[in-house]
Image (cartoon, rainbow, N blue to C red; front, side, top):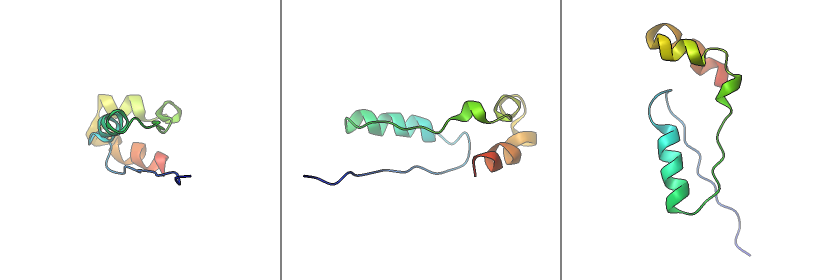
Length: 62
């Protein structure tokens, strides 16, 4: 039996982590597990004004 393998992707918000994760999952026919960003109260504000809310949004995920 082969042991499970994992790929973790980390980086700044808006850098393309989700896009990369989707592409890797498709290429390797793997299950994709994403963090739940809907729980982050700063997400909508971040996309309205990235420079003001980038820090708060990123820290929430920590």
